[in-house]
Length: 151
Image (cartoon, rainbow, N blue to C red; front, side):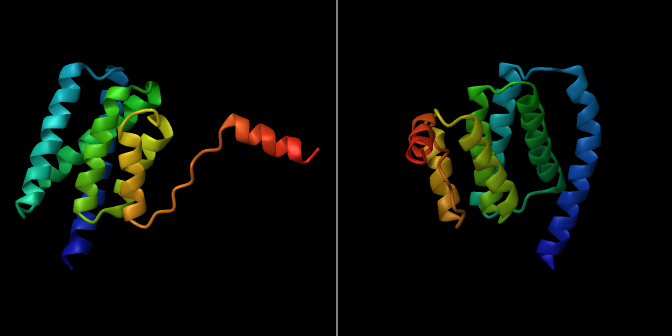
C-alpha cells in the first residue's frame, strides 16, 4: 500500500515539476557551478536520510524530481561531464528507494553520455547488480571487421 501511495505521489509531483520546470528551462540554458554544487548537496542530504532509515518528505521527493528534471534539461542542450556524478548519485538514491526504472535511467545516461568517465564502470556494475543486461557499444573497428567478414 505504501509503495502504491508513494508511486502515485511521485507521479503527481513529477507532472507538477515538469510543468513548472519547462518554463524555467527556457529561461536558463546552462547550469552554473553553484547550481551543480547545490544539487549535489541536496542529493547527499537525501542519501543520508535514506541510510539513516528516515522517510523522505514530499518536499524531499520534489527536490529529487526537480534535480532530475534540471539534469535532463541540461543534457538536452549540451552534455557536460560534471553532470555524471549527479546522475550517479541520483541513481543511487533511486536505487535505495526501490525506484528501479528511475535508477536505470540515471545509470544508462552515464553509460551513453559519459562513458569516458570513472563513473561509467560503476554505473555498469550498478546496472548489472540490479539484473539489467548491459551491452557494450560496438566500436567502429569491430563493426568494420564484421562487415569485412561478410565480403
